[in-house]
Amino acid sequence: MILVTGGAGFIGANFVLDWLSASDEPVLNLDKLTYAGNPENLAALQGDARHVFVQGDIGDAALLPQLLAQHQPRAVVNFAAESHVDRSIHGPEDFIQTNVVGTTRLLQSVRAYWQGLGDAQRAAFRFLHVSTDEVYGSLGPGDEPNSPYSASKAASDHLVRAWHHTYGLPVLTTNCSNNYGPYHFPEKLIPLMIVNALAGKPLPVYGDGQQIRDWLYVADHCSAIRRVLQAGRVGEVYNVGGWNEKPNLEIVHTVCALLDELRPRADGQSYRSQISFVKDRPGHDRRYAIDARKIEQELGWRPTETFDTGIRKTVQWYLAHPDWVAHVQSGAYRDWVAKQYVG
Ligand code: NAD
Ligand code: TYD
Image 1 (cartoon, rainbow, N blue to C red):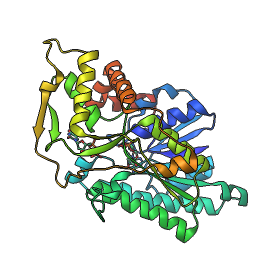
Image 2 (cartoon, rainbow, N blue to C red):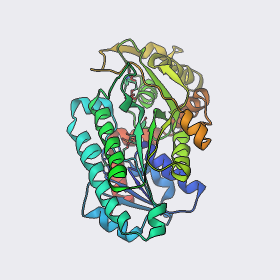
Image 3 (cartoon, protein in one colour):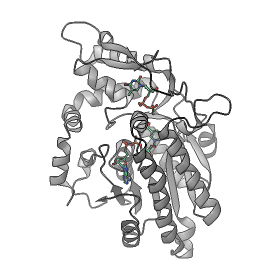
């Protein structure tokens, strides 16, 4: 059994689905079901005894010890976080609460559980913390995390590291670039552009659209995490990236071109005509990129998707799942969830 936190969110749900398609080792999935958590992402696992879903907070110091004692996981993979930069600018407190306080409490609960394990299990145990390239800042000389989101994630990375150095907890950290793919909440760049384009709405490009991100297809991130969990050296940090640095405007043009091909507008115009340049995000980081040579050279991991193959799959997924989009946008999935999953 492994404990996955945040497994109803974008990457967490992809990870749980991927894990259970590749192995029979059960997953205990702990998720608070914030606006970003959607158990409908896990509908394919309904009735599957290998998946145990619990609605709860990583910072719940009463729930965690009980869950850990009951299910005896051999590893924790920590996805749970507040994850959207724009939301962190408007309301940073939730980010501190989950990403900093929540991670600390999770570390404390896991440490107590880990210390109580027998020798062999204690040695084999792993706590894998999933983090972001945004903690490195805007890649100027000596840059630091700049947004409330990236500052809170950097804090959590330091805490995870400290629990290793101070208490010996066997931790691993991955810092990954921007993910994209199925189940991505349509507040982030790529799904927002697809969904707005299809709805005939403006495609808001911040500033000049020349900010650069590195993009990784979510299934490749999942395989990287599996590989680090399996073979990563305790205490090490692994950068995960797609070797796909692109300016935002180019991403938006690519999405428009794919939609023009796969779902042309009735009036024959390109979706590009919906692009609207809007006021820039405050403190907007100009460039993120990742050097993923360490995970390649040490652990033999490489992404399998190119940006061209991954973005095509992504656009096709959104075209094939209008109900999912409608549900996450309306909030109706919460009622659906309440009936299906959460007792
Ligand atoms: P997401 O916002 O889609 O999902 C986060 C999940 O965590 C949701 O299901 C939410 O309900 C849950 N959650 C939030 N607070 C919680 C709490 N206190 N207790 C339990 N569950 C809680 O995020 P995502 O894009 O899937 O990102 C997952 C992780 O990967 C995050 O830690 C993020 O920092 C990291 N990351 C994301 C990206 C990216 O491009 N999306 C890139 C690198 C790293
Ligand atoms: P986002 O998907 O929010 O991820 P992050 O901020 O974590 O990198 O944004 C990706 C890039 O796209 C970022 O440079 C901001 C930009 N962006 C827009 O130009 N318009 C939008 O509507 C959004 C959501 C993002």
